[in-house]
Length: 425
Ligand code: GAL
Image (cartoon, rainbow, N blue to C red; front, top):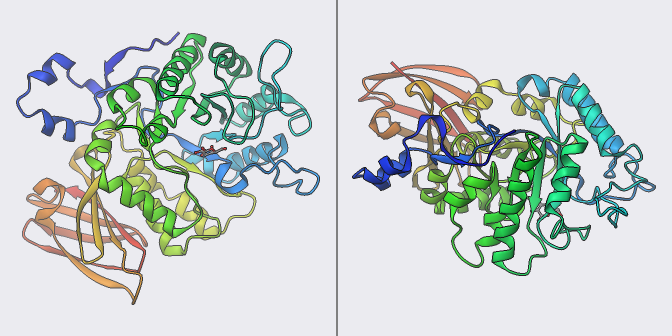
């Protein structure tokens, strides 16, 4: 049985000590959120697959039997996650989004799956997913209805948590549509967290609480972190560069708040990876993968694993980039500087290593050169006295040793990214 308590994650100091520290802001900026939902889950960002961006609310199995939201779709994805190397590199959670439900609860007030599209039921699907060595995620909503109009959980938090636990569900994405007030929203998210905890089953709790809070006031991330394993802050991702850019722009504009909220057990969720779909060029797919690694984001792909290019698959399965995303130190990276449409992002990693991403946001012209003084990286420490630099993206290349006084030259394609790993020497 797990218990929701406030705890210092990864050996952080108790709150009293923190308050006693003179440089509190510095501490909060440097130590990722010390307090997390204590369910022992999501110690590194969740990895898996989520149906929404690619398959949305397609319920027409007559017209579109291969892409409608049905148990068949999830079983096929489970087979491929198992057989095509996804599970091996860490993609573990196969997640159902909106539109899986029947339009009404059953006679006992329980949610039920659409009987036509999920004839064997969710319990059966969970067993199947588990038999493949994977975990199953499901979706519900804190308010009266889900965003697509299916039954909401308001007034049913305990019953729904128990139902999900009985089915063997391992993750709940809890949306925030159809709430009457911010109080109802906040209480709903908290109560569902407690209800999940009371089931005794380990269920990752994925929230959208801050996203629905922002229009009213700045969310209290300390509180959100106590109840959720990850949380969406910003609108839905689309399969477009505009959308990826807007997420990055918004994240960097508010990064002090977001970076200090993230850490083992609780992460900012910039939404799904859309790599392998239709809207991003190759360079833009590289940028999404690199920056989601820098941001310590959950890696939830939304694509069709039955038809994905080898190139996109290789990028999504890049172990070096995944290792940055999953780094056990659990500190989220940030935008270090922006000049002339080039952004430099960095992320501290375990063993004094750093990840650095150079993004070329200029959408005219060809590849641009950008030279970095290595002394400016990693708060002056990354290459002090020297570091070994590996380029991970676009092409894995050993760039060699750099002393503190040296300059590192990069060349970055328009809308692309060069992702580097610096090991202290
Ligand atoms: C949105 C949510 C999306 C998706 C959709 C389902 O509010 O942000 O990620 O879950 O609802 O209707």
